[in-house]
Image 1 (cartoon, rainbow, N blue to C red):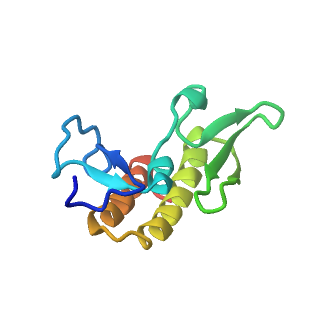
Image 2 (spheres, rainbow, N blue to C red):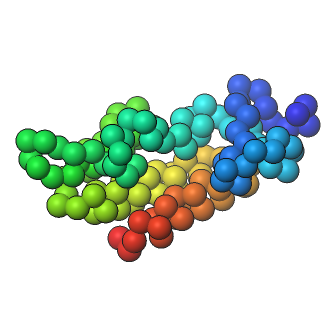
Length: 128
């Protein structure tokens, strides 16, 4: 640990390898709290919908939003007729933010992992 840039950072075990359960210098990395918060998606708050999506009862449409790590604000992305469209809007914005955040990283593994994680989300979610 002492050979790594760890001060004021948090140990992350699954940024480099999604679902990782092994703590080692090859599989874990120290990240800033900003990166750690950015990569945490709470499934519990989704109400059963895909990440970035909730049901807007009054509009009877799917609402999409994304937390901006730089402003700390929740960004409204729109109302959509399908859950997949709303999720795609979230995935697109999350990838844009991941590119901005990756440009700030001094560890190239972290920069690459941020882009890869949200590029994969975009591919799984369909073409945007």
